[in-house]
Image (cartoon, rainbow, N blue to C red):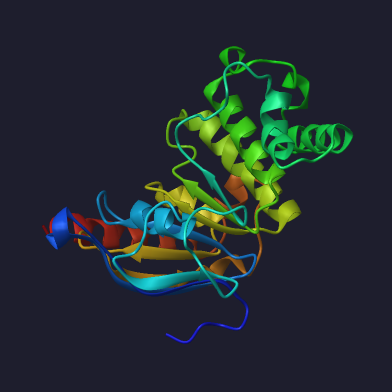
Length: 262
């Protein structure tokens, strides 16, 4: 695969094996991720999509192949990539504001600057009113908002999200999805997310990469052209968009094919 000139991330012939090579999680995957595009990894459980995300994050190394960010090889975690996990990762002894400030403090950003940025980001994630609250005083959705703000505070060029809303109930989940649309529009990050939720993938992403069941290969790589390059602040507006049902039906059909292929 020839890297695209505007690619923020390039993965070339990436394979990841475990158990001394006897188990292949990801098999010969090549992808380019253009700048400011939102990509969703979708596929059946165990298809290697989280493994692929972790390799882009630098948390795991490919057994074969290479991954680069703006032409620089990924050799481990770095400040250019921010990772948001499903599990809540706030420090319980710090307030929401202090949690968001923490990373900036570590890298030496001055108190006034980091306070101003942390307050702005908490407003951006609709949590300005809870700046002085501790994690034990926050709901699951609020804790995840803190995690998102804290990650954005590092100003990564790439935002990686591993089922970030998977532990939330349905109402909070769609509220968080709509909030992410706002953040994506403001922050202009390159985003790669893993999700099992087909509606979530269609709503948030510009592109969906669908993985086969183990070993994980690319089954389909589609641009959501029916969205016309738009992002929808309210989820119901997308559900009414011509073409939405066809895409959803196709994704469910691919999922069924992969589940039944075993």
